[in-house]
Length: 128
Image (cartoon, rainbow, N blue to C red; front, side):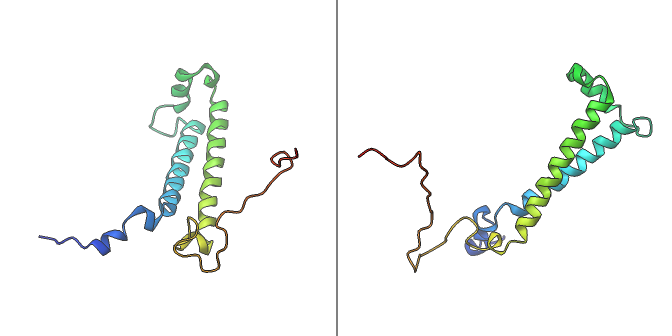
């Protein structure tokens, strides 16, 4: 029988570990899937998988030709590349990997405001 260790279990809490690694993995998997679909649309004869463009054509008449499907998938791939790059760059930011990743944690010794607000001309009360 395995005993539960509450201190060790805390390390697996998503609030402690964060979602960054999972977001990077999800972005990578989406990128792989998008590129796989793009290859199938670009050369359906080479792949034993059915022609994806024909499947999209059953969904919408806009996708009767393979060219719009390729363009849509290329846009998706570009989005996934940006998403993956964003999270990978965030991982290089030291504060994103600290206990302060979601704002200040613990006491505020210098009494610095945690949230700074800015006023705009439209939000100021100009009437006296």
